[in-house]
Image (cartoon, rainbow, N blue to C red):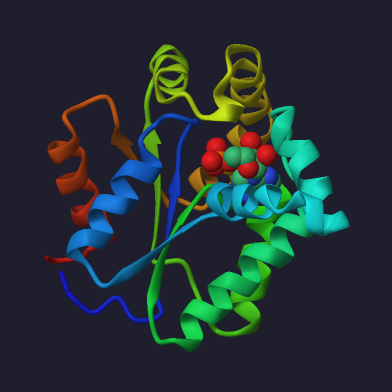
Length: 195
Ligand code: AMP
């Protein structure tokens, strides 16, 4: 266990509503590490969709519960990861990689730079819990029809990401259907981070 997370990359996977964002935010209160949520980045861009054609394209995808196209997602998120590394910080990735080609892209880019992923965690909750939590939080892309669509897209495109890391023997499952403190303790243990 260590307190220095410099240069580390921790990947937090899980269904929408699995608690990735909540847990990453809580961990960042105690550990000097950056929470990088691809959903937050893209929502920020979408909020400025009036100013830019690219942002408008991103908004169109978010608003119908579809994923932002892979090439865009990869370039935008990778730029952020590299900027965090330049600042000498570690990062928890929340929402990326979300497709097999994003996972392969991340591995390729990291290996080109002698980097690697420190931990890969699936925050596991049932589909029922996922839908319930999404509908409870009331974000504008969390309306019932869009929420269902996002869950469906996730199961179709993101399950292969779990299989990809599972086959490499890298995936650790953490039960996300428990009290927040218990989940957080487990996550920190798997990340090998001491607070
Ligand atoms: P989230 O907050 O992670 O549920 O993401 C909200 C929305 O942002 C998703 O429904 C997608 O439209 C988009 N998004 C987030 N992460 C990604 C990603 N890695 N690849 C493509 N689209 C993404």
